[in-house]
Length: 310
Image (cartoon, rainbow, N blue to C red; front, side, top):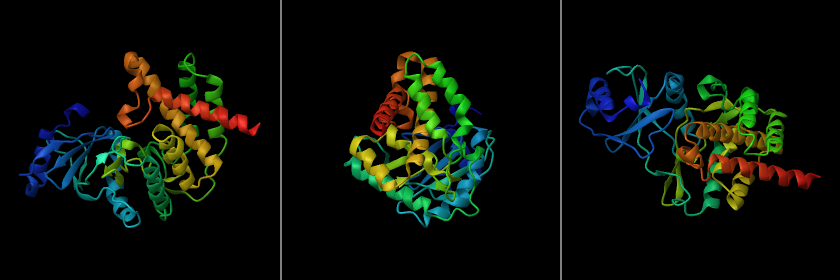
């Protein structure tokens, strides 16, 4: 079943056949329905989340097992799983009902003070990293390697650098990537969100109100959670975010590597499929910049940092 087949009608059928107490509630599309999973609103107080492919099925049990544990230790609301559905109505995968969280996904226009927002997000992540990860799921296929080593993406990254080499400074890109590969997380593994992007951050009255979509969560290296520093924050807000996280330079280098990998593959995919709209690549994640602009920003920062150390 393709993502396009995940419709309000399908959800209505699933609800009626498995949770008849909710059968009279309307099922509505939402502003951003998700990428790995498709989300619908169920009545006023709930949402329904369906994995859009088999690769995301492992996230269902993970979220039902661990989100209630994490929620007790975090300063902001996160998704609260209420019920677990089973395949039915032609839909072949398990699925979930969650409590509805109010708010709109983050954009610079919706945020009152971007620097304050960055500090609040860093405080949330710091609290997440302090939660005991014993018994939690180690990074792996269920998290799409978020929290794991960047070396997993080495061949893909180098191939992509070569593919778009006429557009970027390939030497600088390779240097950023190799700097990221030069270290690994040497501390205890910590809980990571895995997909800290504006589309997974909710805003109410201009402030960060909730963090959603823990499908890529895992216990491992938190460097992957810093990507938003380059895709959304800039200047004072980037500094506030990174300063409040208090990560060492090696972890930030890996964070730049994560951001470079994501921007490279996003831009390369765009110019293969829709070259005339490549400037929009990254918009689906809520990035402030295009994927190409993120690459340029990372390479500029690398040059500045390199010059300072000479």
